[in-house]
Amino acid sequence: MDYGKMGAPKRGKNAPKHDEHNAKGTSKNPYGTKTPKAELLARMKAAAEAKKSDK
Image (cartoon, rainbow, N blue to C red):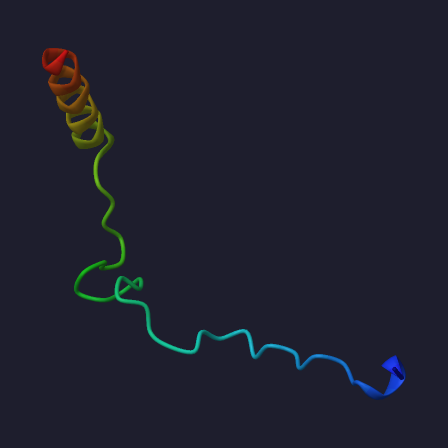
């Protein structure tokens, strides 16, 4: 087999082939909004409490 004749793989164009469903700047994920850390901690505590009460 002559590996020299195979050619190199084509380089990417540095762009996705499709749009992401949650891309930055869309209605589902607008720019500048971030879920507050307090909200995340409250969800984590509620999940831990639910897991502890299940046992």
